[in-house]
Image 1 (cartoon, helix red, strand yellow):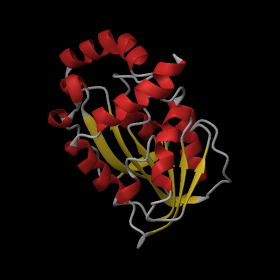
Image 2 (cartoon, rainbow, N blue to C red; image 1 turned 30 degrees about the vertical axis):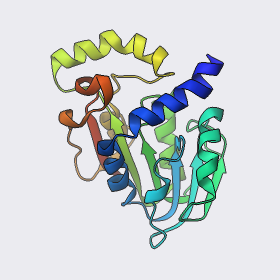
Image 3 (cartoon, rainbow, N blue to C red; image 1 turned 135 degrees about the horizontal axis):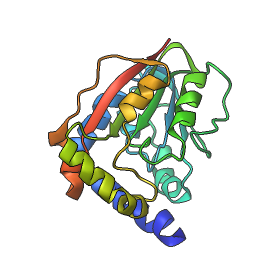
Image 4 (cartoon, one colour; image 1 turned 90 degrees about the horizontal axis):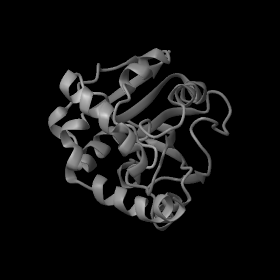
Length: 209
């Protein structure tokens, strides 16, 4: 899986998620970031250009994939805000408690090995009142689509290097003790790629109490 997961897949993912609809949602998501910001699952840096230096004083990014980090390296020098890239995973963030005003997670919770642990870490490193901004594809509300998501998930996890079609990420964020503001709406018509009908998107801001 090394060649595929670290070279071919990062290229494929950039192609799939470079769709204008997805990029517009990345821009809208990042527009809510302010202060000291952490982005988990930075990938190749697709969100980087959207951070506003008038509101973001620093950006720290975490990405475990060497292939993604190689692709991101070319963009770091042109960052509009001061940026620090830290290798690691969302399950074990190397930062002190209450270090960040905003945490951003974009199409990442679908692939992490332990969603609950990632969200616990997000809550730990956020300051009280801090915002967790996330854009994720999630388990559909439609029972027929749910069945197909469950059936295809084993294949998706291989092709997508751990990506799951059937995670109820918005509910998992609530379960982790966050308050969602506003309540996210599943956007069935704005899924992406060949799996459009099976990748409803949710975008929301979660507040750390």
